[in-house]
Amino acid sequence: MSATIIDGKAFAAVVRAQVATQVAAAKAATGQVPGLAVVLVGEDPASQVYVRNKNRQTVEVGMNSFEHKLAAETAEADLLALIAQLNADPAVDGILVQLPLPAHMNAEAVINAIDSAKDVDGFHIDNVGKLVTGQKAMVPCTPLGCLMLLRDTLGTLEGRDAVVIGRSNIVGKPMANLLLRDGCTVTVAHSRTANLPDVVRRADIVVAAVGRPEMVKGDWIKPGAVVIDVGINRVQPAGAEKAKLVGDCDFDSCAAVAGAITPVPGGVGPMTIACLLANTLTAFCRRHALPEPEGLTA
Ligand SMILES: Nc1nc(=O)c2c([nH]1)NC[C@@H]1CN(c3ccc(C(=O)N[C@@H](CCC(=O)O)C(=O)O)cc3)C=[N+]21
Image (cartoon, rainbow, N blue to C red; front, side, top):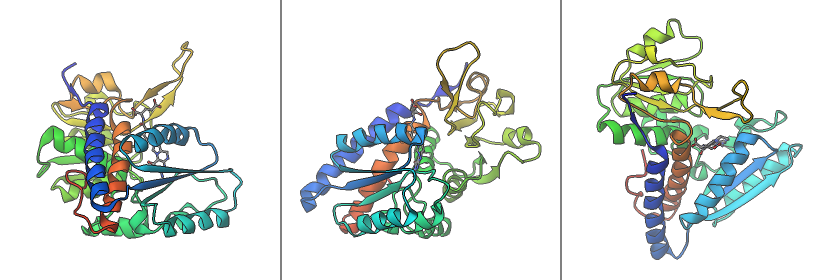
């Protein structure tokens, strides 16, 4: 193995410490602390893991955490009523509605009902439009975390060839826009891309967010490239008792060729939660007309 392992878990701890310091300063300035409301409808397992870790970390950085658990069969109107209440609540700076929502709900309508200034996921249509047009926005947490890791690993991203594999609204598309803004030449590839290995081989930066376990192989990677693996796939190895987490990259073969690579777990996942806390602080600072948090925005 030749690649440097990018320690997202350690980097996320540094980000959370920066958030904690700036939360304390914001509290000194205003007498208030940021509050994050998380709404979980039903019992999606990935969301439960996320909520568990998030809740603890929110409190650890000195912010208030408000949890709202609704039954899977909750009516959309009742969820919208809760969102209206959180929008109006001055103690709530950030609102996150866990996705996926149950099938009977219109996720787009629910997300767009959130006050865009409190939309710490950056999924509201106003924030999407602002990101694409280069206006000050709330930026989705996972792409923001990936950007922080890339800047830390490479310094400037200007002029680099980046390939994002995956075109989702929550990772692929916002990631591509952030990389464009930082001066990369960006290709958005996906599961239907022709000659995907050849496309990936051009890249100085590979962000894999396609949701297919270990799909990206080492012989797709340009020697020395930086590989950011966003995938979190639970797989059941033959003969093993417990499921294990793997990324969208075949770690061993990619690490043999890449210059640097994020592991799964311990890579992008912890950064996502750290950036959620950073976004909540950013939302608080904007609502209270304080300066933007330092080093925590895109
Ligand atoms: N509105 C919304 N926003 C989200 O950001 C969102 C969501 N809904 N729904 C569910 C997914 C999932 N998600 C994770 C974040 C961090 C880890 C994480 O910290 N993972 C650890 C490992 C955790 C484990 O051991 O299972 C790691 O990669 O090291 C996992 C999953 C955010 N999500």
